Image (cartoon, rainbow, N blue to C red; front, side, top):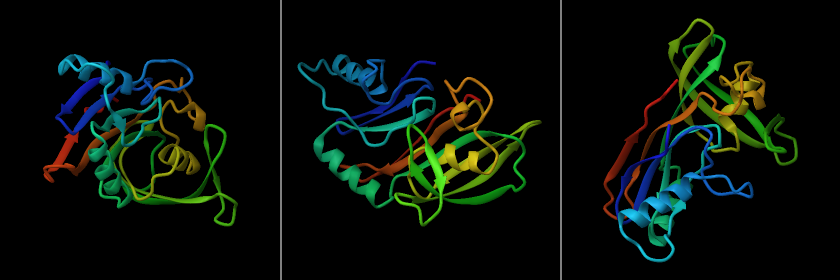
Length: 211
């Protein structure tokens, strides 16, 4: 699966990131969704010089789904304000190992940002931050469960760490105890909804879930 530009106007760009691709460039020098989108804008609009494009949120490398970019500093400022006020809604779809005992639930943990992973701790631990999400089961398979997830907090590796903590790591998420490669895990940012920073109209986008 290749990156796909889902929507673009003068203020925002929404792209669909395949698993295994970085959201933003890092020291590895590997390709990233941001670099792909900048090249796309440069060609599409025949823009000379550098292209302004800034990711409003990131997805982990092995995660797929929708990413929102701002195309101007004004749009970035306004969308960041929405993000701080928790007005940007993202729904995730995940497939986890095993059969969850409940058809819906809420997970509460305290997470510590460790070395390339989130560690579950106690409320009293230094640097521990509260993490909460809700989930609804959409499908029971023979040895796994598909869920849709709403985040109430936005912690580092939150979904991955929390489902691992209850004994149901995300399929192929080897870093958090699952079997499999870990290069492309069964976690997808499948729905993105927010207020357009200029027109104020509600924007909603959906991505295909390929697992």
